[in-house]
Amino acid sequence: MKCVPYVVLLWLTLLGPLGCVRRTLTIRTEPQGAIVMLNDEEIGSSPVSVDFTWYGDYGVTCRKGGFQTLNSHVEVKPPWYQWPVLDFFSDVLWPGQLHDQHEASFVLTEATAPDPEEVLERANELRNKTLFEGGS
Image 1 (cartoon, helix red, strand yellow):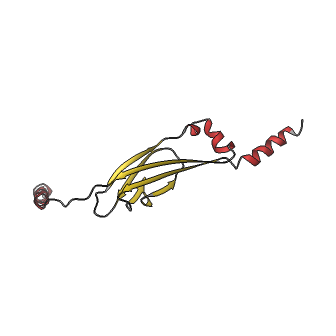
Image 2: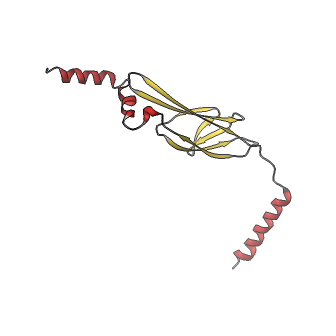
């Protein structure tokens, strides 16, 4: 009976490193090739995949020349095997690797040139505000 703790320790040592969950988020845009930022950190050009550690709400910014900058978010929810208590088994004891994949797609809107009269009107408003309110 003395060897039982050693058998358990050996089992945990051999199987412990095998359990692992890889979490991946893929961002796609239409059109492709937009620069994608996740929580204000550039991750590449779409389509782009990135590994992540935590589930939750991620801020997404997509930029491409000729298109309006898109600011949005994506909520990444855990699968059932990543719920508290169960995650111990999938992260530590599962004999193999699980791959939790999430995807989000965004459509970029073409940029439109501003109306020259509107720009001139806003410039005049700003000038008047600066001259009359700034000199006080």
